[in-house]
Amino acid sequence: MSIFDLEHNVENYFVKNNPKYLKMVLGADDVMPLWIADMDFKVAPPITEALQDIVARGVYAYEDISPQVKQAIADWNLERHDLQMKPANFIQVNGVLTAIAVILRALTEEGDGIMVQTPVYHQFFQVIKTANRTIIDSPLKIENGHYAFDFDDMERQLKSGNTKVILLCNPHNPVGRVWNREELQKLIHLANQYNVIIVSDEVHSEIVFSNSKFHSILSFEETEKHIAVLGSPAKTFGMQSIANGYIYTNNTTQFKQINSLATSMYLHQGGALSAYAILAAYTKGHTWVNDLVVYLEQTVNWIEEFLNTELPQVKMIRPEGTYQIWLDFSALDISETELKDLVFNKAKVGLALGSTFGSDYQLFMRMNIASPFVKIQRAFRQLKAAMDG
Image 1 (cartoon, rainbow, N blue to C red):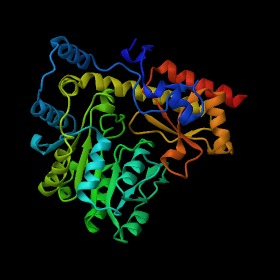
Image 2: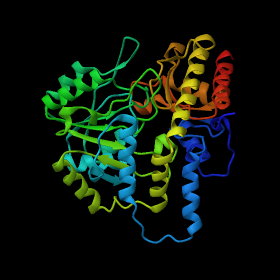
Image 3: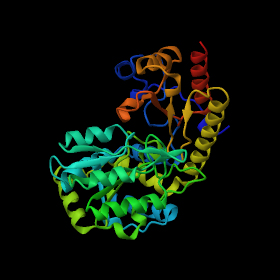
Image 4: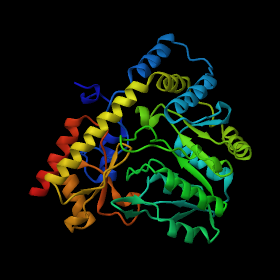
């Protein structure tokens, strides 16, 4: 049995299980919670061991191992993605959303346009709005059986001159695209042409399946003037509640502006438990991550087969990465209210509402599949039973 097959019923205050949040967000508190993008798996053993060692000391004085952590992140990216990263160019913050919030405030002005590609991670909208910036939506299109950038629409909107940042999600949440080199090259060309900064959220970069390859925005030569890269071990290692995030840029001016704002708000001061957990993850977590990706891809294979044979009314464009899948229920020809009743009240499965990722996706839902295989099977069989009536 795989370590990922184990179901854990531990006492917790996890948001995904909390009846208050379930009732508030989904309208039902008795569902199988597969709506939040975090894992049901225990973290890699070296992370637990590192945390136990620190707790065993019984002393929590001021401590700084950030140089070691930054070097470990650089070494990880060199080994796995052939990226040359300078430890001195990292800026530590509380997480990826904090990173985006800081970057928008440091590099843009109130009212400036921030371009996103819907459907997209719903917190992008919130972080843009709370910074008093303007959301510029350039929806993805379906082309040759997968989601793609609509470059014609993007350029039309960039010509207005209001867009200052393209907020990129790579790999993309929720549709699971891992943007290929040609697509990213074209995006960079547009950004350079219209003097727009690309802010690339690459938090899912390690969860990439066998027929795809992740390309960081850093891997292109003509990007220094426009790029900030955001990352965190949170998604890769299931450490959402203890991991920090980081910003990386090779641009000296960008670095000074972002770092000045982050340090002025004391966002760069992480805790020791986070630091040691991150260090253990990036120095000893390779095998665990490799096994995780294989497990998730096997899960995707089963879901794809089950949908094709048992639930052909529900469509899924196969993801190339992340542990989210994007389910299309539009063939059922029902309303969003009826869809919620079907999934939440009848099937008793808690999925993320598609409309939170973009207003045009009321008949879509996102499922987190980073759960034991038997649990995912149970969810789909409950969905089938509800649809069969």
